[in-house]
Amino acid sequence: MTPDLSSPSRHVWYEDLFAILIGTSIVGLGIALYAKAMLITGSTAGLALLLQYGTGIPFGWLFFGINLPFYALAILRMGWRFALKTAASVALVSWLSGQVPHWLVIEHVHPLYAALLGGTLMGLGILTLFRHKSSIGGVNILALFLQDNFGIRAGYFQLTVDAAILVAALFMLPLDKVLYSILGALVLNMIIALNHRPGRYVGFS
Image (cartoon, rainbow, N blue to C red; front, side, top):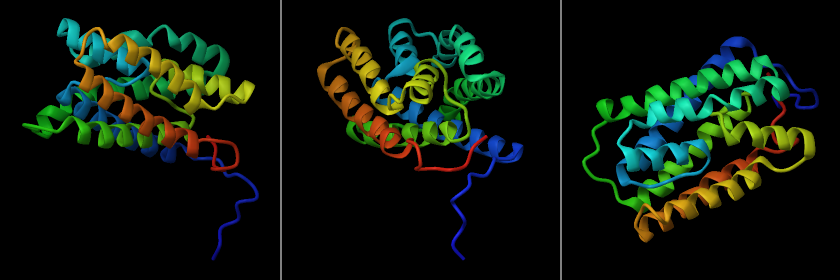
């Protein structure tokens, strides 16, 4: 029987919870692959990875701290429900990204494979969170706000921001790692741009 897609249905609380757990787990695995291959991504996650490579401070602590100022925008512009779910998602990604190396020991990963698979995993994870009115903070919050209020595609906006972070990475990482990272960023953002747009998904939280 074909489901009726003419009227959106609201996600119940356990659907949102399940989606947040799935989305953050997928993102955490993607970040772990990037960290192992010493690649970079965009948004606050990319900044946290750069700082980790430069300072040795664990990604989770940096990622959690960098996102704190963005919660004000989330509360003011997106509402308390979105802000709370995003805070939970950021905390989970911060924790899970540090646990993955203990749960899954990867001795070697080719940077091309890490870029493609890691970018895909992060894109799918972020898409899952977006569809349940959550995000992994930072630029994701700003991207959702701009899409919802001004019609600017979240994926394309993030691609612009990601490009700026990747340029900064040229001063810290070898050129080949930056090029692999650019490929991963394209995969990640195309997943969001092609799938997170009006009419593509009708459920809401």
